[in-house]
Length: 101
View 1 (tube, helix red, strand yellow):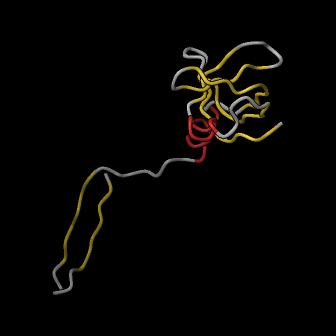
View 2 (tube, helix red, strand yellow):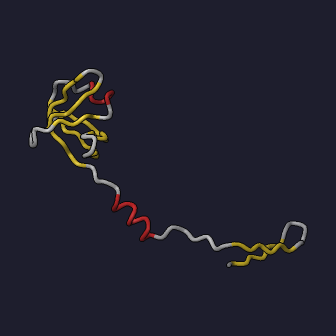
View 3 (cartoon, one colour):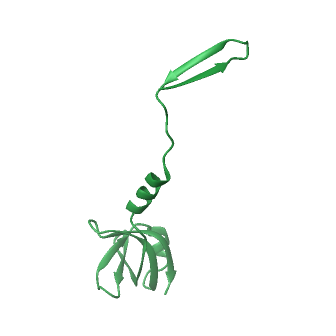
């Protein structure tokens, strides 16, 4: 345990005891960052299906739901490059950016 001695504004000494609080280390930050999925670039055609938009990937012919319908709507029917993180379980791309290809 750490002890700290403080002198209050009125000249009284206070002794505080408690567990030491450590700051997150650079190693812990690096590990957390390394575990975060990296963004990838996907190229394909934006297609509307009901209220959602999907990207049909040129390379794999796979179709992925785009989670940002506002951005995707601007590119409906166009070939685009999408930068984002793929959730493989739900086949959803968490869009970071969309641009015409």
